[in-house]
Structure formats: C-alpha cells, structure tokens
Length: 141
Image 1 (spheres, rainbow, N blue to C red):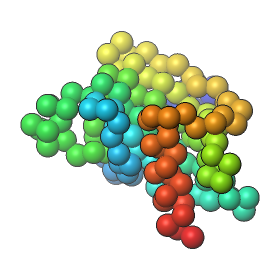
Image 2: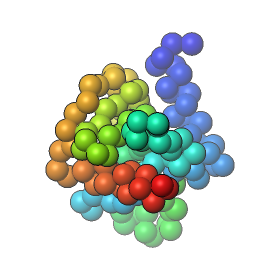
Image 3: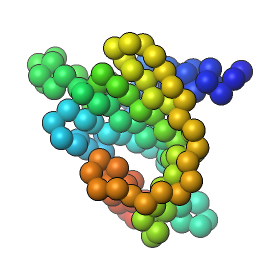
C-alpha cells in the first residue's frame, strides 16, 4: 500500500468511524471558523521529552450550522482539513511534521504532507496548538 493510500485510509477511518472519530479531542478554536484537535489515543511523551500525536485542523467551519445542528466537536468538518502526525519539543519551542495530509472537502482532493525538519513555532494557530499539546504533556507528568 502506498503512503498516499495508507494516509487516506487512516484519515477516513479516524474521521468516519463513529467510535474512532470520537477520539478527536478539541483543543480549541482559532479565529471564528478554525477548530483544532488532537487524538489522545496517539499522544505519547518520549524519553527525550518530545511529544508525538496526531493533530487535526478544520478550516472555514460553518459555525452557524454547527451551532444550529448541535454538531459535537469530534464531527466538525470545515472546507479544508489538515491531519498531521507531529512531534513537539516543548522545551525547545519547536515542532516538526512526521507525516500527514491536507484534504479539500469541497473539491474532494487530497495532498500528502511531507516530513519537515524542526521548525520554530509561529504566532497564531500553530502557537495555540503547540501550547495545548505542551500543556497536556505537562499535566501528564
């Protein structure tokens, strides 16, 4: 199975299967229509202190529909979805993407996300996700 097919299968299972979709835990929102999540079943802290977990970002969520239909956080879908397996260095204030994909829910297109090197945490959405992941890691110590 190619990497692309593996990622697509993993994403579909994690987002479509009710019992697995509920494993997404909302960390917060950014601006008015972006929601971000982690999958706590994949959350781990390495011996070196780095934190690894699957993360999900839902962009351009129809907030009015979400509220009106009382859609639970784990079932929220935006116009675009980014799902990454990431590693965070909380002490060093950096992160890297190990694998993942981006999905355009309107056009039904998918793009692989390649592995990145260690990157500083930018201000904004990524800083919010970083803070949430590191806060969860510190709470687990």
